[in-house]
Image 1: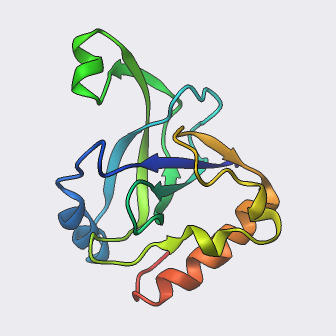
Image 2: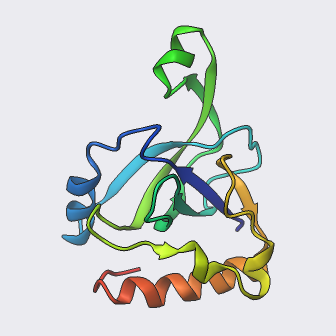
Length: 153
């Protein structure tokens, strides 16, 4: 099982259902979705993901879960690119943890030590593979972070 970094920038895509989906997950209900994975082709069912919030602060990890499919091509999420016929690749996924808009992400500043220093946290590209040693450390930090919100991981 590989681990991937997916990205989200609220200035580029408004996640209008985020609060409702975070509440639904906290109530023990399943939350699935589809997410852009850039040009990455190696993602597959059973792989793990972490979702990085970018743009204006607060920046950091806001979700984790399992990838349910390999990349699938469809209309681009950006309306301007979709109008020009530019496609985008997506994976289907299931969230295990999803922080709401009021929750504090696991900040990028906390992700710069040891093997995590090798991860390109300022990337604009979704679908970057995280090295196994970094993924293990990220998982440990994430579990400790979300325990503060009394979320299950």
